[in-house]
Image: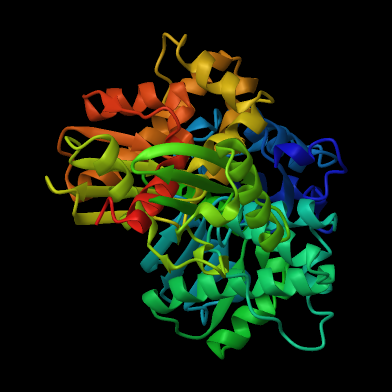
Length: 295
Length: 257
């Protein structure tokens, strides 16, 4: 929030890029890319013949085309590959229509479903994507196609932005809030306000009452978990179940969702923030294959 | 009869003392940690303003979200009841009351006797309350009064996509980055809030005359956006934030029923 801008940026999560050094992309037939320009973070994923080769994960700037460009450049860094070597690019996410070099834009719901299917395998039936400014509950079939979904994109409750507000309020780095919230002997009552603005005032009151930070975080993680479980239950949850997006890395929220649902989430094998871009890259590969066949 | 009304709101505690329909004094205190102390302070301010001793007050009614904190009140009323009573006294011709406070928005339809016919409340989301404009003023790094004033000078309607106050802040920041003029951003903020208040008011049915009360009624930018959205002029009393307390005091005195 604006009054915290002079303090340390506790919300700022670590940006990253990754590359598999064992893959020789020059030997690949199809190089496909998915770019997910979200409201908070942007990712680029490069697949070589359907295998994960490289990705980047960074914060979205105020300019969508530039954010797409930056994510692409960072994923390409050190690979020797240029944009001309890529056969097909799919854009997805909130800013998908603003990915200048994408041949096609596909909704993030479809991409997340497809990406989760790749990350967790064909047994995955329910995906909860907890992003920066929205939260989606998606039911998928064994091929990763969307069967049904529900989405909250109107309200910060249950999103990464909501958690960022709390990280700033408490002065705890966003990557540590989940762990820290588990350091309570027993669970406190959850923060009762749904609205993040009101929850923040409520939390300030709890701090003044003398609650330690971990207890306030526990109360907020519980409220966030409760909020998204509500969304999941309206959709219907079928196992296997997994959580993607940035909050998928927050053990404080994930463990409380599992507890309230009575279902364990599959352990992530890859960075949960790249699911959308990964799905986009898989669609890009399929589209390139289709294009080549029809020639 | 001298009576008092106290409105314990989310942000301010307001006390109003009246005698036979005439306001004797008012006091308002920013609500902090110790509700008991805030209530006492607001009373002290009102008594000082009225220039009378506390024992002159025969009856005290409480209203507002924290009304149960007022231990020595003779009775308490909901904000909706107090709003309707206060407005019926000030503007007997009003059929719709819109009350926008710091953390809550209310729309109330009243009949010709000032009785509540229907009402709608938003208390779950900052987007339909003063907290929204406060957050946006912070994002724009300007005082709230300034936000209202420069909004009036805007010549361009810029749409705001965010409904949520948290998302709204990010959107305001990106509008600043895009070099959108501050006055146009201010208008966008007030337009967005007015849209939400209007849709809440339409749920109960908007019938003229319309009275606007609550602290947000002092924001001239919001008022302009609301009037544009409602396509009518609203009536605003001099101290819009004291109308609930006035209503409670009038109910206590039996002037309003």
